[in-house]
Length: 105
Image (cartoon, rainbow, N blue to C red; front, side, top):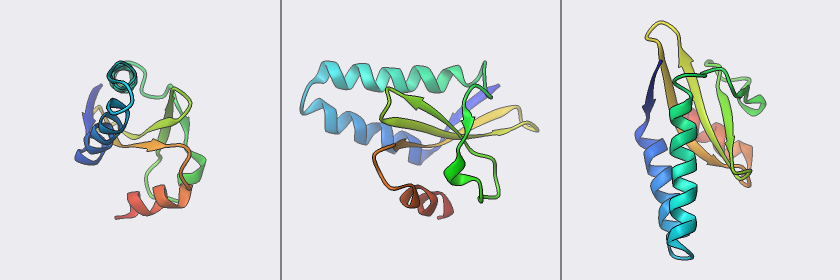
């Protein structure tokens, strides 16, 4: 399957990079790399992550792949186009209601 990162997901990864690079470029690079590798792996194993329970009321079935305990790659699978769409990268320490609002926009 192809993996497509939304503008929002790319923006979130950039925000993570910008935040952590002020503390340690090495840490920032490792975290961003882990997120990118995890996202890429969804092309081979699209159903590897659990369905995200906080998004169960949404029209699409969203899955969440946890990366380094604090971040989730939120995505859905489009079987017709054989594509995984990564819609955002979410900080798990935030309120799930914010995530629901973000995906409802």
